[in-house]
Amino acid sequence: MSTLVQAPGPAVRRPRSLDGVDALTVVLWIVCGAVVLVPIGAIIALTAGGSQLGVLVQGDVVEAAVNSLVSATVSALAAVAVGGAFAVVLERTDLRHRRVLRLIALTPLLMPPFVGAIAWLGIAGPSSPLNVWWRGIFGGPLWSIYGADGVIILLTVHSYPLAMLIVSAALRRIPSDLEQAARISGAGPARALFSVTVPLLRPALLSSFLLIAVSNLADFGIPSIIGLPERYVTLATLVYRYLQSGTVDEPLAVVATIGVVLLVLAVGALLLNATIGRRGWELDASSSPPQPLPLGRARTPLGLAMWTIVLAITLLPLLALLTQSMLRAPGVPLTLENLTFDNFAKALSSSTALAGAANSVMLATLAAVVCGVIGLGIGVLTTRTSARAAKGLNAVAMLPQAVPGIVIAVAWLIIAPRIGLFNTPWLILAAYITSFTALVVQSVTAPLSSTPTSAEEAARISGAGRLRALVDISSRMALPAAISGAVVVAATAVRELTLSVLLLSPGSQTLGVAIFNFQQAGAFSTAAAWSLVVAVLGIAVIGLATRRPS
Image (cartoon, rainbow, N blue to C red; front, side, top):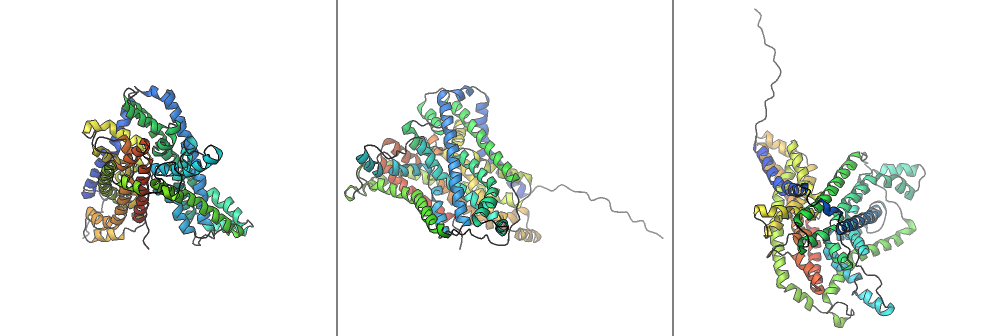
């Protein structure tokens, strides 16, 4: 008797039921939509009406736009040239003390640009000791930092470390086998470096240029302190004037229109940078370490030149701040009789500055906590789940990195009256969260991306759900990175200027705005004293937060 056995049919794929991870994704999407998409959408919606498009062809706007494009482009080119050269020398040659030199060369990245501008006034300002001495001999200053050339030079100084970091990372990915093959074929060390390695750095160099140009395009601190005394106006300082002076009708609509232009340029640069990244060469890693280029007789002169340049860029501004803080009055000769600590006492006892410092610490702490929680959640979801919604969430969270600060500030000014945040310190906090969440996301995704998922898989096999595995395993592994990112957020927010000066309201002055106001009011010693405190503490805190474990 035969038995009929029914052949198994095709397996039916049942839809996965929603769980805690899906709920967390929805919550983070709502949060990101509120702090990123809504402000950007508001500024685009206000501009879409077209009522103020004519402002783009007005004389002062055109002049400011030309100045912004020139200063951003030239400074970005110079920063890429300097940063790329430093990276090649420090990564591919046998220069002595390269590690220490590299750390010192990155210092300008940790100093707020407006603090750097105040510092350089003590070096090349009209009343600096050098220009006072030179004027006494020749009747005029050696060089005044005020004006377009000063803006471009300082933008270069504060942005070359970014190019140096990007190019250094690209150099480490280029296998040394290519240089060795060129040298075996008869090329000398220098020719192998410049004919093989440097051409492969073109994507990194172009990427550095785009990122730096976008950042410098909307910088406020340096053009306001160095450019305005010579009537060198950029779009950032023009927006500030429109919002503060009340000389134009519908100022929000006007600055929103200018902001959208900056937004389009920034997003265009971001897309171009992504395209360059996709078209870059994929090279197989080399197991052999790169052979440093022997400098021979040029080793000592090049070392002296590098140390001179790096110390002039990094140490001189700090010494200039110290000198400005201790002189009895600007422009007096630099002698022991004219040095005093009274300016520090006056600065540190100023009620205005102390109130600004208290507000800055409060807002920076809250921003660090909120950005830390949001960034930790987004970073874990992005690296530990494969859902498209999580990947899109990461893209939205990272978008403000390519959006100029003045665009974010104007966007929040537009929506603040509708949500009850106008003329409150919480408006500044909201802008901080929009701008700085990406810092924590980057801090979390970098280590998690290179960490195997075996621990989470073991937790799932043991019966834990997806959310439980993410919370107990992934989040705990990423917590130190999230804390480091939150510390960087706090150190960045406490000395921030662009957002704070545009969103300033009664009772919500920050330390950066207080220092800026001291400088604008002529209280140079007070501004220098607080700038020195901010610079030293900022470098120390960020250095500790980003140090590598031994």
